[in-house]
Length: 587
Image (cartoon, rainbow, N blue to C red):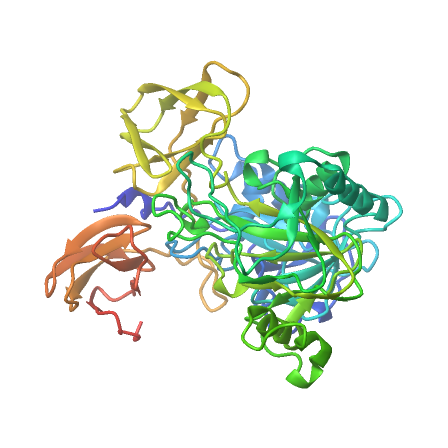
């Protein structure tokens, strides 16, 4: 019923020198330091964005470089080989993905991608051991929270310091939603230049009433309209020298390669007293477009992170507030003169209360708020709703950029025509899709030539065009003719779960089990694995599906395209029963 080769993973032997893993339950900031040895490195291993359950590791120079030779993959890099090997020492997270999840990138605590052994040696300035974070294939690095008020300096190789401001560093403000205050993001000269450019624009590009909107228009773009909940003015800056610096710095900060197709442009906003922006999310959902996959964990694209830069310091008000966080103040802290500016039933008055009782990032020249709309395991974070607090005194200037994890929604028809040759080197049919739409099938060894456009992103799958992604390709600007996409068989890396209580030579196997599925709903239910349809069950119908321990299945009403209302994780039991009904909170 689904690709069996994905589960029959070859279990390769562990390294001859097996590292003892130790779970750390103390805060990261209090880690013991270990004297540096140029031939070995001691570091603590974490899941992406995590601040708990770190595993202390020690590896040698020779071990690091042996991972490539033992990977059985021809074109693997030392960086990827290291991340894959480390995946056997800690549980890597990716929502709805079968276990074990494979990491293909590893990052240091200061944001550096691990590509060389020397990066694992202790910090030169503090002698503290490094922290390493594993990122699952298809997901993006998320800065770890660690603890409230924790300061993390960003590597100069990740975000080069701006002359006159010092090194960029993050102050942790919230774990859920993930919010940071960023220092030294812009100079006063850069901030003033962006403001001056906005003021100098005329015609359609001039400052005007801000709009909202996420629905797709008839031209494929995003419809926008004025809304009572957003009262600022804004303009867009794509190409001024200062804007280009801010855009590049924002991509660097989020560790995503700069790509015009992964951003919405630099939006410049101005607020005067009384103006603000009501509580809202930055992410998109299927309510915006049911044909677009907005879920990063399943290969989709969404606004991943927001970088909001403060270009000046208003006299009072203007914080970026996060109303879905815990209370940090009381209503007694709300100035009466601020409340008196708005009617008792207005959103401005309600949001003003949140601005003094909930988490907020204050506007300070040269700093920025960094917050994530996507969780480290690839889910949409509904707690990331935020608001621009109504300004009380002065003028507030800001500039923000939305960074996408992949090609952004609303930019599907941009670019010039291009031709692509898709070549299937797999042993079975490959199904090609664009934005979940069928674009053809390529037989083993076959070639499909297609006319497309710059920035379009295609997906290759087995089984059907709605199947799990095995490869993807984004159309480039060059060459104009004959861009080649070689579709290779997906890599499969054998992993063993390390447990200090087991013998080093134990063989770990994962044999098949049977799951009896009973649909107690009054409606038809679709059972899926990795968003692939497995079976449709009518009301009161039952069926048996074959699976493996750790598989995660989902149940959706009517169609697997709909959001799941229930999930089931397969256990080790040879026979088991999954009773499907919406209020079943047993699993």
